[in-house]
Image (cartoon, rainbow, N blue to C red; front, side, top):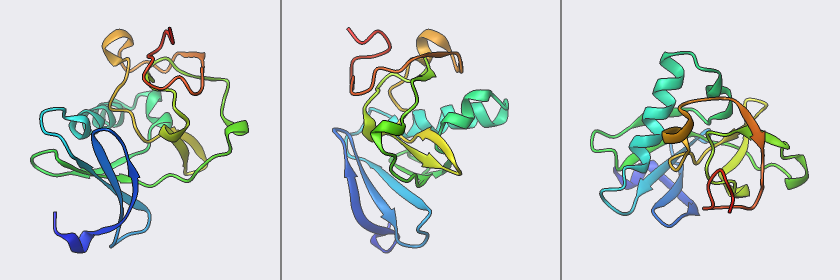
Length: 144
């Protein structure tokens, strides 16, 4: 992706960097720094499946705008931060990482903007609610 599309670096995880989109301030650009993990592809596929099949889970996801042919670049709608005190007590059990940084607000909804690591392999694209254990990043749905 050409540097003219990239704005400021606004986030950094273990496998991806997130940039503001220089062309549209309502989008972010995620760059996968390691090959073979396919986190961008996973997010794109999850979003596409919930959208095409009109699954209730989609209301909890930040929408994906587009993805590059190779999957290394993903463009997602930008979320805004939420005070930790306002986080819900329950979320769909689909969500694996319960880190505060993975969630925000989009279109007046509380959504996840980092859902590449998820429990879809256990529960499918279910929106069944389960108690949220905030701060339990990388622990999975059982938080053990």
